[in-house]
Length: 141
Image (cartoon, rainbow, N blue to C red; front, side):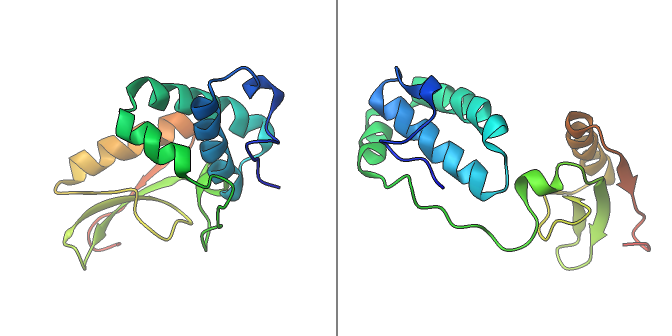
């Protein structure tokens, strides 16, 4: 069940109302992606606080009128469900560049002109996840 401006984690009780609304928005998006509440709350809190510090008056005004309780789940594996997947570096024949993506992902994380750039990005992702990088040649891709 998504959080609302009336039903949210107790740790957000003393937040500024717009900071709380941003945390609700981020938290609901994470839960729609498959994150557990226990994991979503601290991540949403940190991201909302960072956003709130940098938000312009226009950003705050938009958030004030935004409906933060409606999130739809994307098709295919994503978010938390891909966190344990190895990271693949491969050649994309359509775009003619090197891509980085999780094993079961539908879309690439990023596109790169060189294999070295792609491998560097893949290593960053894999290090955060504790997974492996699998690098393919052009002919294997």
